[in-house]
Length: 412
Ligand code: RNT
Ligand code: ZN
Image (cartoon, rainbow, N blue to C red; front, side, top):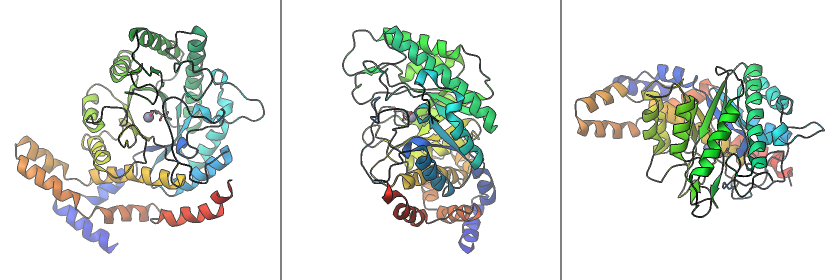
């Protein structure tokens, strides 16, 4: 409390109201991905992850059942302040008795997720799963030249729109449904246009179903390459951006999906003038799209700054997307989610008017100096106050370690 008071005075001198910042922060939704808890395995397949993405490590305690995954998520959510949503993949369907293939999924297969979300008072986001399945043929799904394969995945996409609308209706919170396909080629293709033409046709077919655009926000996520698909990606940045523009759906940018010196923080302000809503997957790539746990690092802070400085908190769907199997998975969730929230708070505590004026007046020396000063401002004291007000334990490692010793060790 005393430290918060001092920090608050420090920020007030710069014209920043810490109370206003905390008020705003607690209303910004961050969607927590379910797939950190079980290394992206899900419940409907044989257990091998495909699609050019990879988890590494075998820390003990991977969630193996819906019950285990939900229990772990529940603990993680209790250690994360603010407003949250839960982000589910289609491969996490929960079957009671009879199973259904991806092209036959129904809302009933996700009722347990709805019950879980309702219990937590949270909304749900959704993702069709176009990987880890025998109908992925030669690394292709919606862009496959094999009509049986392509049609199977189109049907999967349609099923997922229905499930997304069910999520929105049941929880009362709009559902963000993100389409990402792994499709690509390891080596130089002879035809780069054919797969993209088929992908476009498939997306058109999926989007031909009737759905409530106030309740379901369909997104398209681009990518630059995947493991084993280094030479060509069907859903490249240009393809996806053109497609979402033409169809009026929502673009999704994953900050692991661009060339190493391109940054999503810069792209946000290039998208906002053209889109009412944009969506983000926040991740941390180390040397490649490695999906390390998100940290409170420069790029995460810069992304948050772009959202907050343009008052776009309601226009940007923020979600996490990473998977680390080499550390405690619950801690991975909490560290990553809190890092996003810390970045948002740090942006809310910037003297944005002053910084903006310095830019417009061409006073770049002072702009640089003040931006640097802000990095050592007493941010941590305001964050600690936020956790206190949200009734969230600061020392989450202690809580998670206890759970590890009591629950996770038994999962062998
Ligand atoms: C893959 C994409 C995609 C996945 C999830 C599991 O590179 O980022 O969003 O991580 O769908
Ligand atoms: Zn992603």
